[in-house]
Length: 182
Image 1 (spheres, rainbow, N blue to C red):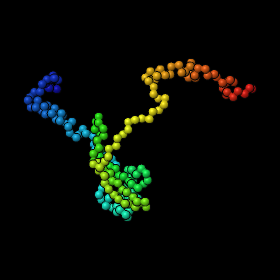
Image 2 (cartoon, rainbow, N blue to C red):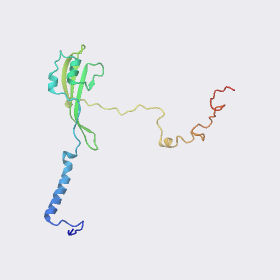
Image 3 (cartoon, rainbow, N blue to C red):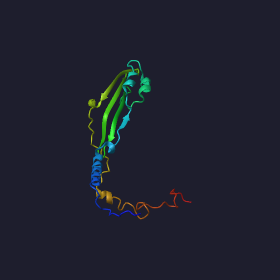
Image 4 (cartoon, rainbow, N blue to C red):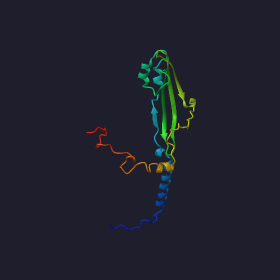
């Protein structure tokens, strides 16, 4: 091979090659802003379409009919079975941040006492109510240990007998411990 050798760190031969390297570097720096590096959008829950809702007539269909058309509900009412909730949203995991929720929608189907559909309504994110979480914890007795108690808590608890507390004696008679003389 009669190729001329060139040092590895030699500058490019022509301004055209330098321009190409600068363009390649600019493209690499611009790529993180593209959606190529973003997590995909994930559909969560059962998205109810308008066509599906048109198949349900209040006052006519029952729970079985609704389940046949819409599927099983995401959630039912806490006390009783009068409301079915179909919750859906689109989410995207952002690196180093909480889960991003977009386009959240809830379809509420209300039944009367006989199990017939009474009302169907959509609830959007604009009608949602914030729920404040309580940060308190119920104290559990005996679990509040300091660092020194955790480090030195087992010192002296076990004797040299392989895990038996000191002062525990072996059962007479070789093991059964029944105390019956033979």
